[in-house]
Length: 392
Image (cartoon, rainbow, N blue to C red):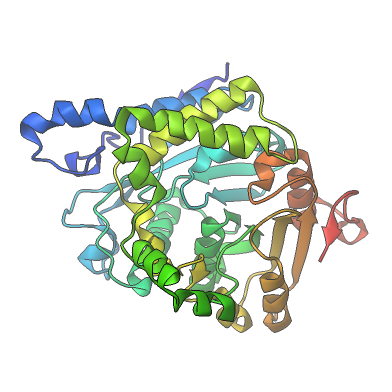
């Protein structure tokens, strides 16, 4: 059992607006909702602790107060209709004093606990800090009132910057997975002075809508699916709608996704059980950050503001990491590299798909260590690509 040292920086109890349903006037309906959707912020944090009990490296869990919003932001960007302070759920792992700092940002419909198979290995060489983005996991879940791509990006970028200020961080390596890679990239474009290196794992946002998708959307089937997408019906909505049957659906998903059909290192029974419990509570809680979907991506998960269009403005050295079977196309990264004026490399990891860090953790760790060799090795130029990995 991992020794967990909790540090309470601020009052950690979320406001009534940040609880499971997001309403503070439920009255007599509250007991019903608690029975129908058996989760809460406390459930999330407890499930996180159980999952991270698999990690041997000691860590500190904290709710970092990011205030009610930056002075120049619009209220609806991430303060919602309330001036209550917001919190970012954060875990920091023990490390050597001179270790470089690695900040890890999860993807869509995920939380920092998804990196549970990676913390021990990475903490052996980095000061690892992992967060739940605003509106996800154990972080605050304000009402999501953004109405545009610009506002939605600001929700995540500005809240991350407020978190950075609260943690007094600078000169760190920023790793983002999938949607988290998109946000990490947008953050580095706005605040390059704080980021030493970008590590983008199966990153979203490097391709735009294809001609094939455009033609499909012109059909009646495509039109219906696009209307569903634009209605912001998320997978989490379905899980909440199933109420007490939601955990069973999540169990089926994790078993299929990470056990039956994984091409890499299969989850153990204990890992699968703890991950399923954690995933359910993070998905079934109040809808917040998940509602970004239709503002960031069009149908088919194509970015409305593709990062490819900003490649020439890149100021931070970048490494892309993709599993061989990742459904995110690494060719978008190859195209972006042609326009970048900073060092950029693309690494592919075998026996792994979109969740390569879960499916092939050892290969993933090798890729991250190689990507960050100039921070870890006294002679980085002599380092060669680890066996099994390929350069694209």
